[in-house]
Length: 508
Image 1: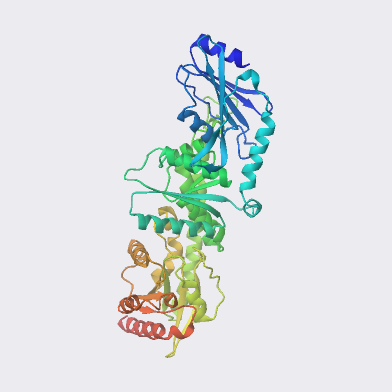
Image 2: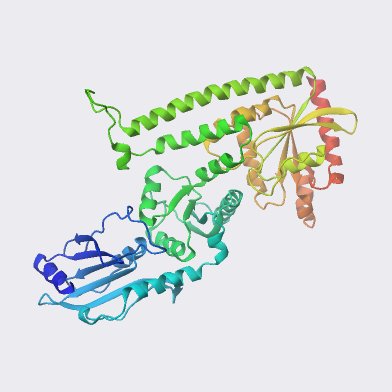
């Protein structure tokens, strides 16, 4: 076969390649030009393990060695083996040069070259070699990672911000992944002045990610930046891994955590609004025509039908949400008739709002050390020390880069804040970027036209920074430092909140 391949390549003066299955069956014949070949899309072929289950043998006419392009093909296609047949001046095969991927990097290299051999003198069993290589890849992954059944992700961020801000954002992405029960295997941060519009990340860095994904058995890439549909397609084509962005991750968390009818409606609306512009006609299944017999024209394409169905569903969801909102408004009206003032907790996600509510009212609302542990608003009665009763409400936490559709969808939930007489801005003092988080919350409150409601700053988790006297003195001038876990630290807060509430009620 090697002799025939070289002869054909020599006569055509073009590189010729064969994609071979592990059984030896020819999957594809590829004819290129003198300098190289173009491997077709292989997305229809399912991988046989970590590797693709295919090996590539192709000719080189100018005596050149295995090139960087060959190595990229080996990596991005996860080929079992890539072999180059050098064609001699008489059109006969000279030597066969082969390279394969490594389960672990050696001397900074992620592949290893096999000794060159004449095609007629190959004695080793290719099948045994690949089985041994696959076993070595599997052995390098811990049993715990494989058996958990969780998604195994590599986090990726391509940022033009400072390294400190980029690393903090990456840490938050990792917390979001943890909140969605995703196993984070690795983090990749690339600082660039200019973002690659097609792949968002440099091709060399993407190659490194592919190696990590292969070695760690990752099945998911999560990008910290929002990706447009073409970027997702391009990255997926290169890596053959599932690719999501920060927005999709947040939407997935919300979908898992929403409990109330209203919350579920809002999440579905946000997901559909995110999906609508990302529908693509690239898939053949979406471009088939569905016109029936006797129709004058071809009818609607499946893509158009999908879009119409989504728009119809969005219209129905909007009506249902409006109905639920009216019911919530009636409940608020009954509460107003009882003349109970409202105190609403707001703040960045995981700042400790639910824990504070539990401690103040002896409730058992779910309060986990996870982002977006609370999605549905919860209200309880609270009696202040000096005989004043109020309704205290816990709301969904804010986060930077909150998807616009999601914020819009949760406006009905956040309407609860419009009834608030006093907002309590709960701040995680133990977070090094608490100032940035404060700004995110303040900006979102302004966007929601809630900036005119009186607000008390409550610096939570003070027990974690008690040794920082300068910081404690600084925040004490702006608000009150507490630990939501310790009831005795909340007395100054209750006193100040009652004082402010009294003034607000007198003024009204």
